[in-house]
Length: 331
Image (cartoon, rainbow, N blue to C red; front, side, top):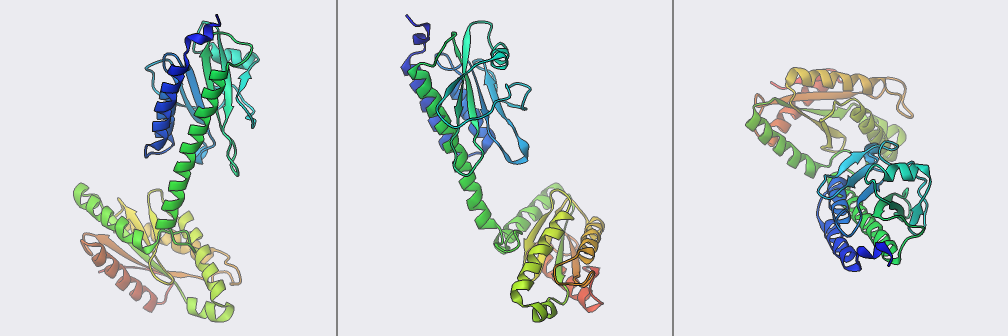
């Protein structure tokens, strides 16, 4: 009798049922990997499983080996063989690298299979599973299990990707990719609540493009919109980690600076001011496009989002009336 029959179809189906439930859970890539791999690595199914997916930030994948062990992040080449992911059906992995990798998890005969993740328009990822007992080919049960698990992984990844796209649409301004006004109000309210609870500083900067009307009259409103898009990129590149940029009005933006008081906000604002003034915007002479900035701090200038925004708006008004291309603290 083929020793692989010890892993019954019922045990594989139980593992797939758990994996299917994992794809329906709300969470990110880590949560998906945790659920899928924990379902796959269990008595009667796989003894090790790795999920390799191209991810934002270069995260290479996740690995689980042994019953009861945790899912860990992995780096290419360290815990996995260097695979050339191919489209198609699950395939038996062979060669010295595969044998060396299998030996990490068991001293008994075993075989490994790669199940590609088929995804149109995206780089394919793959699942790599280790099954007990040496084998010259995959059993039908192992093929179905590997292929179905790969499909579930892809389904979960697509759900995560779709959720991120929906969040992008709901929270981002289409033109500038800055946060939109609706999200600005929510984000600022939460930051104020956090600052009040932790007693950490919080500041905001409101900025406005100088003489945008003049630019629009010269080059048209479409070019003016493109200028705002480019300005948003320049501002974002000058912001420290953790700060947020949001669209506030027609040509106004608000920067939220958690954990930073007014002096630090002035420093950040000055960096951004210099970046804007020194950037070579299309159709404009060097230094022609500038911005003015109004800085307000919690709780000195207000304890609500409306109070802070009004204080920053007043400071911005003073900055523009005092010559533009400058920062002004709210009083």
